[in-house]
Length: 500
Image (cartoon, rainbow, N blue to C red):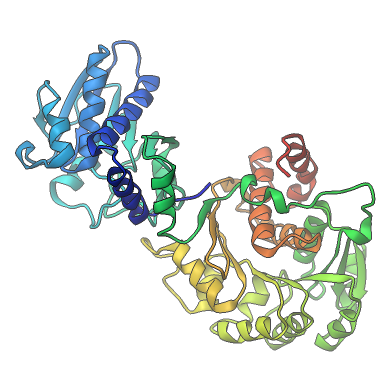
């Protein structure tokens, strides 16, 4: 589950070598892992073209080429750069290759069943240009399937950004552990299927690498299963928490209802929608198990929160922007309850993240913020929040540290960041979740899990994963109303797998 930054992976390699594992042995193991995945994709007597770069990534390619040729595959090998300039382990791997070495020609990719991309690894420090860029573009234009070594050439291993351009692979073989760039877009889409190979670095070297980077994880049940709510023989609705969802005015109530239904379906024992009087009838017409209370102002909310059983407040979906929403958030935070803020509640603090942080700190509230890219940019004043190359994990961590809240930076590569530095990247989802109201349900799922006692980081990570799992189960035609109805199947699967 842990992810390694590029620098941390270098530390793993150095620690393994310092502990007595020869660097060439690591390269041989990496090349063997690449060859094994190539065999799984090649027909009998198939042809493979191996593209090697000037560094250790190229050395892995030389090893894979030698092993595949020994197995009887037709192997062509092209090198970007001068063979005489290869150094260290890569030079030794090249010496062991007895076949011809062509100069990489950006003009044509030979006919083959598979291309192995061993040009550049995760530590690429600059944008591709010149011959290297032309070669990558030629590979993509060829339409031939590509197996990438470590990362598709051109992908930044830490941010997932394409450095000028990048290979589009059908599969990527990496070593020891995944890196953030394997899960962050556009790297995630460029990697194709992901395989992780053990190359013999050993547990001590891995721990040495992990110690050099802040904890980051691939989101999944192993990350939050121990904190997931469990029912006992004495459980009842009052032990499962009571979530309060703030509704907007008449004609703007649907988002709050979607959030409330998400909270109820994920297991909150009780859910109440606090609604302006003019919207009570509209909400009542659609709600049955979910209760209704009138709430016109921050003062009314303050009165409602004298009921200690209301342990989580969700504010934002359809709430409206401006001072009234800021006042409601201030009251909810001051009450020290669990707090989930989305949509209008976040936009109401546009450019005022320190003020929001002060409210959260004043009441010692356990808060989760769930901005999409536009809301993130408005709240934190970073107009380039979605820019190509932006480090999404670093941005989410900084936002969490500033606000004292868990930040769910939504998108195709949702990042969940905690003020304590932990981060998770979610790749368990589908584009079909990009539909009106989907994010409102997500806020409700997180609130419902927090109501049951789940800590904010774990609740946010679990909510994002459950939301994604529902989308994957439904697929085409998904609308937001479907997501809560899919929760029983999602939760049953977790129970059956004993991962809850």
